[in-house]
Length: 259
Image (cartoon, rainbow, N blue to C red; front, side, top):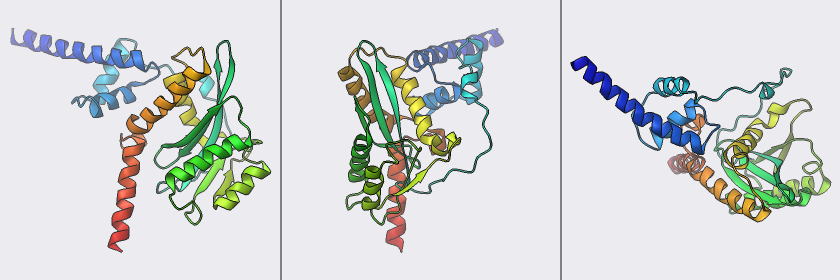
């Protein structure tokens, strides 16, 4: 009788946990078991093991199936830069979103590779070099009160017409930003930024039906604010970009004071 009672308690706990997992999956259908576990552990503050979450999700068909389309065969490439502090390596890239009955809206993202923070973004009906530059200027103004010159800031991009334009490259030189470009046939060169674009589409674009550019732009602003403040990254020790950035900058300040 005691064993039967313990089984009933475990089943009840699993039922409650499964309800919460299903609720999270309803809002985030592209989340796998690791991200579900991270939210349960660090946001909901539940004492739950990763293996248990994986088992429940697998038993109830809630895991994410891998897509062969995302596993293209690529030749080995060189290592990409690995920043050791905020505002050392940024990536800039563009994607586009189709608004039904309207057309394309272009989104330019400037991402800090160390903190995974979107330091600025631009969204509009065009994406020429000066739109990319507007996003970069805003990012610099936000992150560097005295300008980026002398800070050692590096900017990685692809070889598209916008970042390789004369106006964009000249502006980078004036601001003291060191440009770097991914080599041809090396998509991993700007992988951090491109992975963010996938997250943006999974978490915002693909699960919503936007019928006007205004609605999309408003949702994009809200989503990026929430991403910076709340999105948990395993590479950051399951901290959000803003939380990790604050820790890193505080550590730099303490080290500078100690010297």
